[in-house]
Amino acid sequence: MHQEFSFLYHPVNKLLISLFGTPGQKYLDMMGAKPGQVFWLPDHVIMAAFVIVVIAAIVIPVKRRLSVESPSHLQQSLELVISGLKSLLDDVIGEGLGQTFMPFIGALAVFIFVCNIFDLFYFLQPPTDNTSTTFALSITAFIFYNVVGVRKKGLFHYLRHFAGPVVLLAPLMVPIEIISHLARILSLALRLFGNILGEHTATNIFIGFFPFVVPWPMMGLGIFGSLIQAFIFIMLTMAYIQGAVVVEE
Image (cartoon, rainbow, N blue to C red; front, side, top):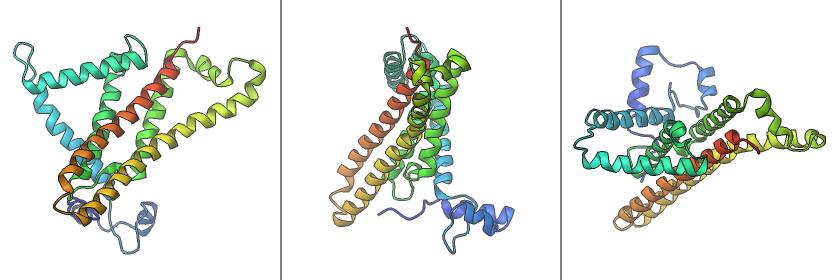
């Protein structure tokens, strides 16, 4: 069974309280603290920061060992994954654009996948089973593809596509397009949150009933589900980027 908090929650907050003192009630109310809870950082923020540390601890040593002459098996595997992701970006967004958006999409994919697989460890908590994390990711994707669209087409031409192809229908199309784009934030965030929370809850229930039978199959299913949820998120983000940068004929 998962703990209510990760193993880092209490030590980190004790350290912060010793350094900065007890947070005020107004701050705690803003952070959504329950009665009796005292903390500087909620668990999902600590876990999200821990994800970044874990990724850096893996990637930085690998980067230092990169070799053109004698690549390691890990390097070859990573190159295969990166090549496949780049091809997918070229197919979805447009030929030759994969390299441009590879850093952003790759970072999203890795961060979300690692967040998701934290669900497999009882002493950790997946940051993506909290809406604050998933909304932060969806808002980041929303801002990114809109900024890309403005840079690609210019502000006037980018905003013009909100009016639709027929000028007379602009008063109707503009509100619809704005609502449609804002709904993408909600869709991305709630889809990721709902699926990870569902897997988290289902795993805990099954492990409670069958503690010696379920864990290994559920771990395999959890890894697969984590990969699928990260893939869905980046696929939708790529589709939104494609819609922002495409040049109408």
